[in-house]
Image 1 (cartoon, rainbow, N blue to C red):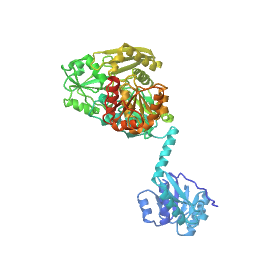
Image 2 (cartoon, rainbow, N blue to C red):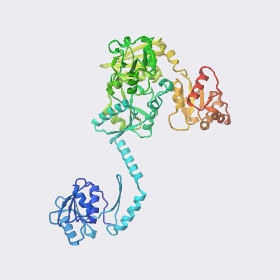
Image 3 (cartoon, rainbow, N blue to C red):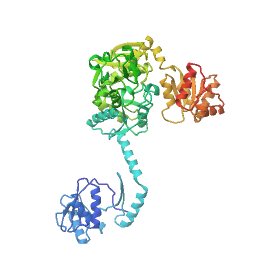
Image 4 (cartoon, one colour):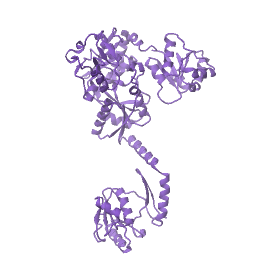
Length: 599
């Protein structure tokens, strides 16, 4: 039985003395350097590699034979000469000083034995034969190396990161879009985390809103255009948190997500920018009759149309720098952007005018940064909140987002809201407008700051009762309609997102039981079949509905899905001509609003 205890020593900046300068000594020095020890070599002559280490200043060299006192201050001693008498003298002095010693050739006379080591990343596997068979130890080590390679080192590091996260320590990974503004915002957050001792790395994610540049945001037709892929990076644990412009967030976050922090809010106002017209002094009055104003925001268009019905609007997509360049090149006479983004990038146009929030009500949460994380990551959310959250900004954003949820709005409807605090009181202004600006409803509410969400919900109800529901119906033609979307994959549904953008309650169901549970016995207005594979998911549900004389409309996405529906014993009420999301959603909309069929 072995009399050795396997241990791992921390030798960083500890002195180890190697007596000898040949091949064996070279191996000892190499391992000690890997362990970041301070190394002193005592030898009259050195092997070329050992001499190179001395020349590079990596080790200390006493160019002579061993002498008493050479082990002064050492933690470990290695006797690696080819003279047994010298090696024993090293062992004797080490024993007298209480220093552990290793003797080449006579390990039984020392106090420890070295092992054959396989090291990859932070994974170290040592093989020890008590000094009896070094060649056999090396053979076992080499076999281990073939089995335990880089993949195991990566798994070790991933496990260590998960442990650190669970314990509320270690670096975090931030998911962000790749635009200049998104990166600037993420770096701003990372810098504030760094001040609190929390390091961050960045994972750049390309979103649907970034990829599609040839259509307006409204035409793409989905909330969360700049959010869903970031949430996917969180869900897949590729990132620990995501930094958003809070105004880009849909009124309801993705499943399993939460807002960990709202950072201190920047200026929430909209800015009117121009290169040829002095809007800085005169505002909109500086623009000529029929001026072209660049904006993709329905909210801005509606309010601008109410102020200046003669204005023409053009969609300028792209990041901030791209839109400013298009303005300078004359593609528009003026441009409207969030002032907060301009400030964060340190850029502007020749002339700038800031709208009063009661004249041009900002987007919900405009100017604030939201930090999102998984709702099951309590350690990360606590660290983020403690380091970043601004309570005053959070209350304002909560009130505005509660209003948005109350009107069932999103990023692509003409709804604006702006909250401000005065001591312990919160005042919330909001607007709902028709796209042409001819109908514009403004309301305000005031109350205790601690009841921010209740105030937002109450103001939403006031706006809807004052006529907002009729205005929004133009943007939500499927409002109050219930559509079941069967799912076969655990990822965000494009069909469900598009239906929700039109106001529908889209219920994503992975089984008949899930659909029944979500609707609590109610029958949906429509069941869509987005693929032939989803027929198996939804057929039992359709049978159950038929059994209780419920007959929702059935819409198939493309001829192949329609054939699968018929083979399952059901007849589609409508089929989109092509197996495309837009075609399917258009068919559902036509069927519900016009009674039209597209077979």
